[in-house]
Length: 301
Image 1 (cartoon, rainbow, N blue to C red):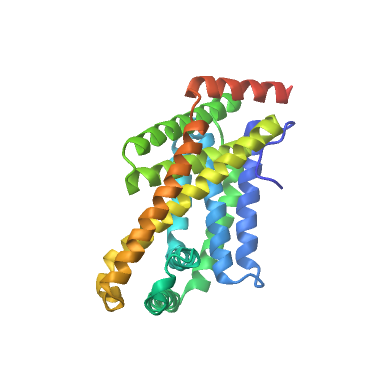
Image 2: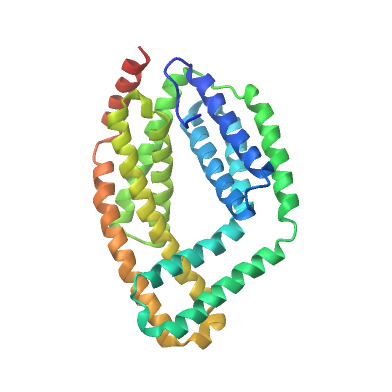
């Protein structure tokens, strides 16, 4: 079923239902032998991000359970990040090459691509126990699935959810302002994370007023993609710097060219991101959440 609340169900019931759906889908993807490991890892990481956003929505009412669940989902995602990060570096570099901006140094570019590919293969070869790690993860997910019936929301669940929505939107607004004043890699990455959580929350309450929420969901998705592409470029350049000896034989001129083109591309991405972001975060936190609370109440009635 879709990642969203239903009109005729209580918030607490919907919360547990959505959690079970995401956990079960992740378990099924691990056990589906027709799906390759790369796809499995990618899909599971997406499920875990959805689960982290879900528990953040009702964080005010989860008490100590929130920290336990958030930590569990976060650690699972990190355990699967090695291979995905290597894949992302290759895809990001290929996109830079496909822009035709690096056509003048094709032989050097081929060398860089080969190094990135070799590094990815080395990680895959070193991760000899991936199959058993995934099986172990499946067991941990199954345990969490069985525990969902014990997850209780203290207080009025609807009020708790609106508080969670308010907190994340407020953080999104603040991180947007901080990144506008100082677009450092850390600030941009933090803004991206807050934007992603807010995007997931909008998806969860999309049915409250589909035309309005669908439009916001679409723009937040675009914003998240822009910030994600910018982050991937930042990670790629950082990887070149951290592995300068490995890439040194490619030639300083080629690496400088890659660095310059990357920075130019990032400026374009950031400019568009701030254009969308300022609109998405233009409304004050309290007025915004009051408006969405009214949508919710009207929808539920």
